Amino acid sequence: MSETMLPQDHDSPWKEALELRFPEFLALLFPDVNQLVDWQQPVSFLDKELQQILPEADNGRTYADKLVQVAFKDGRTHWVLIHVEVQGEPEKAFVKRMFQYNYRIRDKYDKDVISLAVLSDTHGNFRPERYEFELAGCEITFTFPMVKLLDWKDRLDALLSSQNVFSLIVAAQLQAKLLKEPEQRLDAKFQLIRLLYERGYSKEQVIELFRLIDWMIRLPDNLNIEFKERVDQLEEEQNMAYVTSVERIAMQEGKLDQAIQMIKDFNLSVKEVAEKYQLPLNELMERLNQNESSRH
Amino acid sequence: MAYVTSVERIAMQEGKLEAAIQMVRDFQLSAKEVAEKLQIPTQLLLEKLNQLDESSKK
Image (cartoon, rainbow over all chains, first blue to last red; front, top):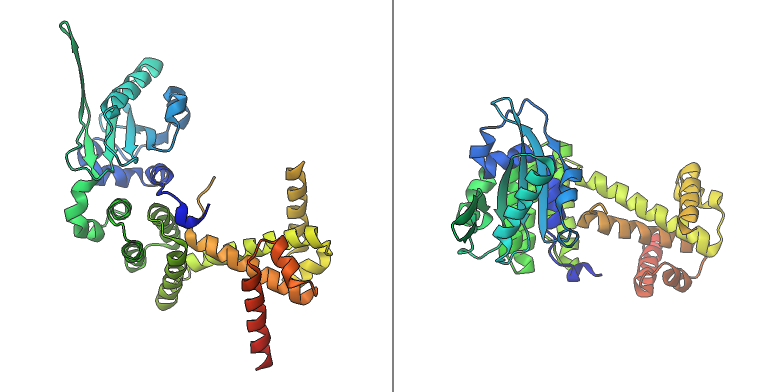
């Protein structure tokens, strides 16, 4: 599928962002919960446990869920279920699903769970925070903290000037949702990337955040090329070859892939190709063998 | 599958093209055949080869 045709995929970047930047996520979006957590204690992501309670049909791409075990300052450990609604459209079944996931975990693991919801849709009036059931005197009320990313729309400057790295991820998500014109998206994306360098983040942090922002704000093919050129130029100006070092590796990968293909298709000598391409012979041989075995 | 960034995707394509050019020149292969086998636009490969020829003449 052409990049131009790719839908906006906000699912996996959120899962990854939550795993990489969980403390920053809670500090920015759920400060009240954040205050309760003892961050000196380890945090565990309970992916297997979560998988057990998700119905098959819900393992799709419209939500990003994370179940996390954290220690509270009271010394006890608690489970936090984060549900990021990335579909972007109001859904009546949302509150029911929030309730179901909470009780399924409670039922299966006998644990109290704090459910948190993040909504990325652009409908200002869709604010689900409660699931209610009442019949013949029997009643259930389930309420949960909810954050609407749209509420940050008028505080974009605050996000961009915040020292919390998760603010850039929220800004990227907002821009991805709100900006429809590809050129605007390109400018917004590049503005966020520029900030990574201006803030003096380490190489690892820049690469990590670059990847998440790139994943969230997708561009059509022609603008991807312009984006790359702008990033290359920025790195040259700043004398920081962070992303370009990753590009070099990707370029080498491309060459290696092509060399393997050529050896097979044109029956070329592996040794000669390795020499001409300045590729390590043993690596080329290894990749050829891997390629062969994956075909069988 | 791990996400590959837009810049990595482009760099990978550039690497592939560079490798194809090198192959055509170093192994005297047919540009058309290489383009077909490697699924590279023939026009693009020919253009790049011409550019290289021009610059080597200067």
